[in-house]
Length: 125
Image (tube, rainbow, N blue to C red; front, side, top):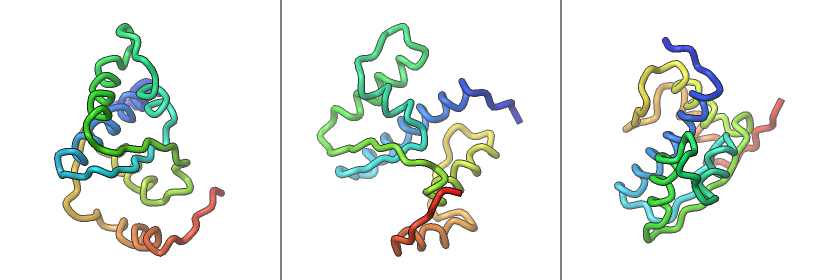
């Protein structure tokens, strides 16, 4: 497994934002709230892109998606207060795939999603 650096985590976060929004658009979702546990993608796509920026291509692709005819809100969420996101982030960190789409919740995630649907509060330790 490759070593994960701060730079590669930023790349994964940017790509997750792009692929997640692209998948939502392709599935016909037109009112989307996208939560990221990293403030970097939210900040970068909210500003003018410097064409020399390391993530310029990804930022531009996300901005193009955001310009489509749909309502998208980008928000920051602390991962520790969102056990479902934390669970999926850990799955992603253990995988060598850049993108993996689940047709059903992976084993162990369903109870966390059900608790979220019941609006159970989770507090940061």
